[in-house]
Image 1 (spheres, rainbow, N blue to C red):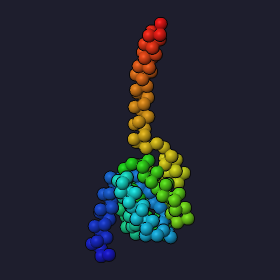
Image 2 (cartoon, rainbow, N blue to C red):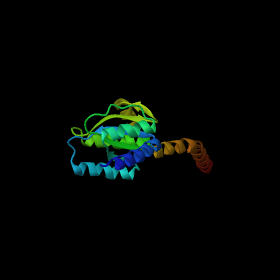
Image 3 (tube, rainbow, N blue to C red):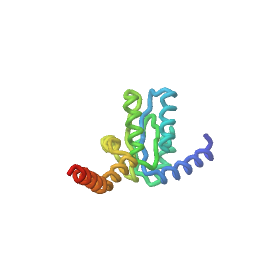
Image 4 (spheres, one colour):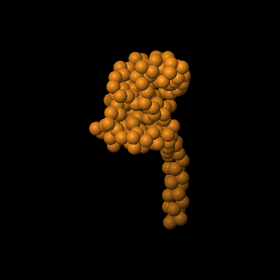
Length: 160
């Protein structure tokens, strides 16, 4: 890469990282190209971006975006997006399928460093759509119970 290409890449990555609310750094040593493509395909469905970036360029980009200093060593793949829960679920599911070759190292949620335990806990939370469904169920419960009560009252009156 030329210096100009590196500068453009850092600018692009800095703006991407600024706009993302979640960024995960994972080790992918030993993964096949087919497995990486599966990760990328499932990430596209979730509107998550996946890219292998040189550690020095990633450090500069993350610094420009206001992220804390993450100790980047060895091979890293960077996965980022706006939905922390969806991103965590995606990476945790892929990690379970590829236990020996893929590992979550660290990450940042809302500009703060998070460790593996926190990421795994977030991955177990219900998604946004599931939470909205639960909330709607709670909101409509009184109306359902009222209608059920009226229906039971009607049946009782008919039997008398």
